[in-house]
Image (cartoon, rainbow, N blue to C red; front, side, top):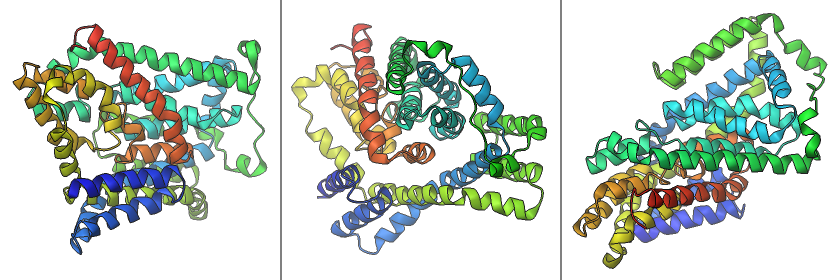
Length: 432
């Protein structure tokens, strides 16, 4: 019963969002609440909601202050010299801009945090896309691909798989290293082709390498906000914030709070100016924060009600025993789409151990099931899954509609997962 209600809720959520009948904010609240009431949880639903919101609270706080911090720094002109240098370096070639976006995301994601990756990469690259008239969906896709393929021993899915199967992360990761390299080749190849397509759409043709791109004229209002004399100080503050953020020395929400305070005091010491800068960026911060809180409602109800666990158990019961020898390869092919149905905890701690034990009974090493899952389940799948806040960070920062982001990016992420699964089979990580 719970599994059916949970599946109906997730399918309804996708249909309502993709068809644009409801906004993500409305759908993320209404659908799980109705599902919980249908499941007979009654007033207990409120406890699930509070639990979900508590879990997502730090992400919401981080996002609000990150928006204000990067917004204030942009107002002060921090990105102008950086963008000018990038424009000179790429020569107006979108193919290099898209590949550069992926490379930056790949480097930032070395800390294993998708949220940090998107909070750093997208604000840095988005002005360049906008000034060249490039499709923002491509930026969302490029950073999603880079972060998704970068599954390192300390990232969440790897740690969950290790704990669930009682296998050291190094044993899971090292055989996958060449597979990951194949995945990264695919990522940069796809980014190159996306950039090439943009060059043709924008009419740059083969002359793009010699094209000189100029910074657009700033308005009088924008010029009044610029603080070129404080560029060096702003750079230091930004580098300190990013270093502390990536190193994980303090919670992200705190470092962005402190960074916002410094950005405001250094560039706009007048209280009226500070209030104006906060007001200028409050709308974007509030809109995305509301969606993130709504996502907390969805994940809280689906997880605490047991719907996700029930769906996991129902899925396991329908795996044919005669196909156990092919289970790693099949799981690798399905791992990315499964991110749209299961959150990482319910999959890695609920579904994966049962799948691994079933496979082991038929002489299929359990480690192969873990490695197959890591080729897509909340790795390539997390940047488009409605079960992760990172998805809403991407669409909020790029200002791309959730449905458009999913339609555009899912085929590339699925292709990356399939390519890595085939590579794993060819390289002998697990059989076809």
